[in-house]
Length: 440
Image (cartoon, rainbow, N blue to C red; front, side, top):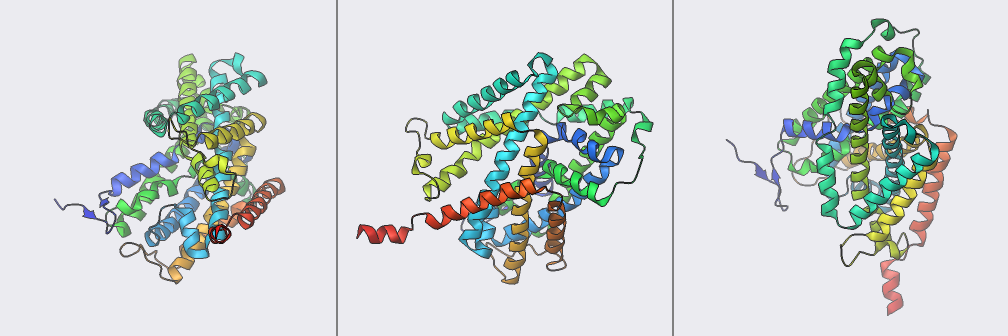
């Protein structure tokens, strides 16, 4: 057997093959959004919702391949920020980081609403406004305490939750297929391009995460072969699972699918399995949502910490607990802000805010990939080269721009305000050279 090769100057070993990368892609994609999105998409497209799934799968496949090329040329840590900085400089890189942070805030708050909705589906008495707010405060407060006590404790929670999220979905598809009514799957009309765009803008939330799986691309063996195959296999498997979930949900509930916006898959399980199914899927959705929010609070507050450390935010956010060695202030601020958004926002509005932000980050990365290739920037070893030159990144840019046309003025204003504030913070931040000159 051929020994894994070592990556120059890093000590890392190229040991991840096609199967491992495919599994990592699937694990990063499947989250709690799929427990709610079938109903949201059904409102727009009805039985033709699978069209939006195909569009999103193609779009995220193009974006994933573009990320692969950019990642093979820039070996510095940081993912999208590192690619943007190498291509366009620190200002664009900082804006990309802020947009990514905004997308994470919206995503975390949206998923937290899934958690609260799943709890209410199991115990209807907890579905009121006040009980929902209490659930969200307990969720974020508890996770803040766990993560303040140290990164290892937070990581243990994430690992346990991740292992349990696929089983209820697969079980729902396999057993629920026997309860499908074929007439519920008949298209009543052809969807328009505008309808497909609106549905895809929301549904892409369930497909975000390919870039996370590629953060380990420096440890992939034979990347020019493994990366595209791993992305396509992992994405293909998840797309088939998502389409199967949508078909089963539509086939079992029919027009009623669009009426249950809080926990549609729980309703499918209740129709197919009875009360036991309702509890099983409700618990599964709650576990998946809890796992996502746990992972988010483990990682995203560190971005606030980094911004404060670099002078973009108050230095207080860069303080570390002397006892637990965790960024306590950043965790408290982040969880408080996200909890307030989860209490005051709806799943759909939060998802759109998150996806608009992350799609702009994707657009920046696609443009960065074209520039990095044109300048022939190289990291460790020969880069992964996409066939057709800039064709795939350009098509990805067009698809992303098309999806963004379905966003409302409110989402664009929210993002624009965030970027203006970020620009001001960038301009007024203390310069290391100026500080040194003042001290002299």
